[in-house]
Image (cartoon, rainbow, N blue to C red):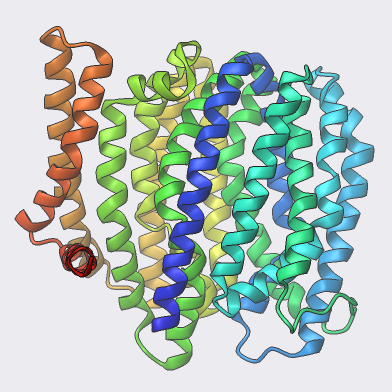
Length: 483
C-alpha cells in the first residue's frame, strides 16, 4: 500500500503542477485572443480530441490491467497503436479540407494538419507511459507532464505575440508532443519495446476497442457543444460556451484527476488480491466527493467574479453557463471512477453500452436545446447528468452487485458538506454585494472563509475524510516542531 500512497502523492503533485501551468496559460491566452479566435480552434480541437481515443485503442490501459506482462504483449500493444494511430493521422490530413468546408471555416484545414502530427508520435508516448503507470512510477510521469506543459505554454504564448493567432494553439500543442517524445524516451522503463509486433493483436484489440469506444463517448460529451454550436451558431458562441464549460471542467478535473491515474492500478490490485472492489470503489468515490461537491457548489455562486478574474471581462457572458454546469459536474462526479471499476472487473462491454447511451442523450440534448439559447444547453447537461448518476448506479448494482443504498447513504455526508458550503458562499458573496461591497472584495471574502467552513463542516457532520485531514494536520505539526 505504500507504493499506492507514494503514487497518489506524485500524481497529485503532477496534476496540481499542471493546474498551475494550465491556469496561467488559460489566463494569458484568454486575454490575448478573442472568443471568435478561440472558438475557431475549439471546433478543430473538439473533433481531434474525440479521435485521440481511437488512436491508442486502449492499448495502454490493457498493459496496466494485465496480470502477467510479457515482451510479446508489449510489442503487440505497440504494433496495434502504430497501426491505428498512423492510419488516423493520414486520414486527418486528407479529410481536413472536407471538414473545413462543412463548417465554412477555411483555417480549419491547416489547424487539423498541424494537430495530425501528434497521431504519428502517439505510440512512442502512450506505451512507455502505460508501463510507468503500471509500475507506479509517477515521479517520472511528473517530470514528463510538467516539462511538456511548460513547453506548450512557452511556445503558444510566443507565437501569439508573433501574430499567429489561433494557429499558435495548434503549434504549441504539437511542439509539446515532440518534447514529450524526447522525455519519454529518456525516462522509459526497461521493459519498453520499440519494435512492434502484429501477434496477439486480437487480444489487445478486444480490450482496446471497448476502452476506446467508452473514451470516445466520454470525450464526445465535452466536445459535442463545440461541434454542434459551431455548425448551428457562431464561433463566438462556441468560444463563450467552451469557456464556461472549460472553467467547470478545469475545476473538476483539477480535483478529480489527481487521484484518477492511480485508481485503475489500485482497483486492479484489489481485484487481484481477492478483496471487495465495490467497497474500495465506494470509499474512493466518497473521498473524492468530499472535495469536489463543496468546491463546485461554491463555484456556482462565484462564477462571474472567478471568470472575470481569470479570463477578463470579455468572457463575462460565459458566467451563467458555468454556474449551471457546476451542477452537472457535481452529478457526473458521483461515479467518476466507474470506468476504472468496469475495467478492473472486466466489464468493458457494459461500460461501452452505458457510455454510448449517455453520449446519445447529451448530444440530443445539445441539438434540441440550442434553439432556446446557450443557458438551455447548459440546463440540458444538468438533466442528463442526473440521468447519468441514476443509470450508472443501476448498472453497477445490477451487474457488479454494488449496494446502491449503502453507496448513496455514504454520499449523504458529501451532500451535507456541499449544502453548508453553498449556503456560506451565498451568504458571504450575495450578502456582501447587496450591502454594496465590491465584487472583488466579496469574492476574496468567500475564498478566505470557505476553507475554514469546509474543515469545520467535516468535523461537524463527522465526515470520513476528517481522519485524513487530521493525519495531514498532525504530520505538518510534527514537521514544524522538528524545525
